[in-house]
Length: 180
Ligand SMILES: Cc1cc2nc3c(=O)[nH]c(=O)nc-3n(C[C@H](O)[C@H](O)[C@H](O)COP(=O)(O)O)c2cc1C
Image (cartoon, rainbow, N blue to C red; front, side):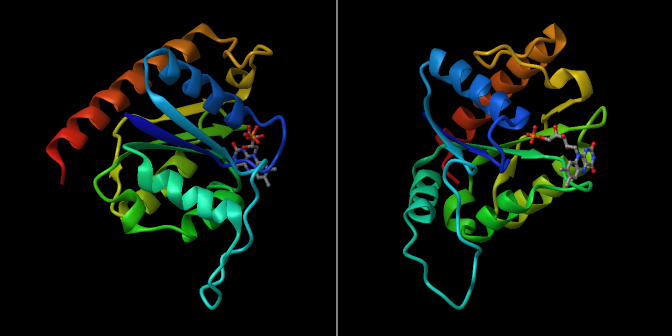
């Protein structure tokens, strides 16, 4: 199985990206092929419907999603919604990339939970015909502390992430067998 993880923060030491790296390592340890696409390291141009882009990062984003069996979308909570860079990335793609694929939403918020960005993210996934994983991951407040090798310091957060990623992968395997 292949999973594409899109890290939707536009900063270097983002907690949502650290969480993506933790999830990526967990999946790799289980034998899953992972493509972690960090929008800070691979910035995209602004989407413009009038222009066909030849940008290499846009091409890699699209190809990675086409090849993925399951998708993880991670965002910082910005003004009760997703980051601009993640929304912009999703504007480049659509049904061809998400149809029939289970998608896990992940957020990092300054407050206790980032439910608002997760809800918005799931609305976008629905609109590109992805299958929303009913479980999601929100880290907030002090849960955003990680060790240098990207392991959450908080034990409950580690447990929650492990359980949710396990649930997500069961769904990915089930839906890829069904072939919608
Ligand atoms: C422009 C901006 C808007 C923000 N809006 C919210 C918000 O609405 N709710 C919240 O809980 N935190 C908000 N925050 C705090 C971020 O969600 C928090 O710092 C988060 O951990 C950032 O994720 P990152 O570490 O992955 O960049 C905001 C931060 C910025 C810079």
